[in-house]
Length: 367
Image (cartoon, rainbow, N blue to C red; front, side, top):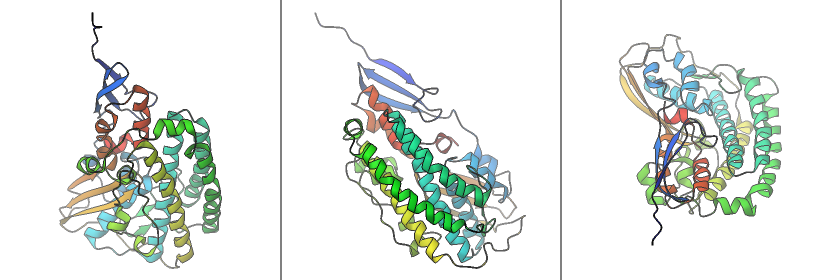
């Protein structure tokens, strides 16, 4: 007589220790095998787009810090001020553009370190988390000395940045670059060649290139599947067209490839920062822009390369002192919905590894 079996529907989240936020995944299991996964979002919905339509353009800088991807505040500020500057044809001083680029790349390293540490915890490598936080604290110190904030900064302004860099900041930033590059080989020794880490990530959660494109994936998730697309190269902003850097691309499309892409991206970020520090010009840090700014009637779409991928804002102005309509294109939202394709056929334990490899932030998904 054949053994009777049936599928089990398992809820993972929204209060699961490995869901990286309030995400619920409805996992259909056949024993330990994953048959299907349905992400259920909305637990962190804040109506940030509607809130932005009821605040002035300047007030929205503080709002995007918190209402979007809270681990990449500078990236959020950048895409917002970029949209406003393009619609209002506002010029940004050269020094401010270089400062913004430096801050954006420090933010990229900081965000990737948060991912690296939590991904290590997901797979049982607690030391990786301690080391990643050690390096990230130095970036937080740099942010705090320049902006006054460690997580939320409200530093970028429409037309430039709020204040110039304090005395000695560039030297400390250069010291951090040297220090950080010396630490990266430690991560290689700890994880890159670790047989347990390899067993948990190599060949696991493969996202083919055509599927990544069809799902609208971007950032490290798409580049790990072979898509050599980076907004900083395809649609340059600030001073990215003046600096040299490579786009890390892998073809395997698995969890390990996503890890390698982010590790190399941090090296490239240091490369960009060093070039900007070397070429940082003197001069003004902000154009004269009225606090009660009124942008001309029209619409604009601005996009940047956030740590999680292609981040865009569609802005519509009716000539008032606040936007008529704001729509955010969040990279984590599209990357998350590639989960279903990645997880089918794997085990329950692999669900945690695959989810961790995507690097989602739920405030970027729900908004």
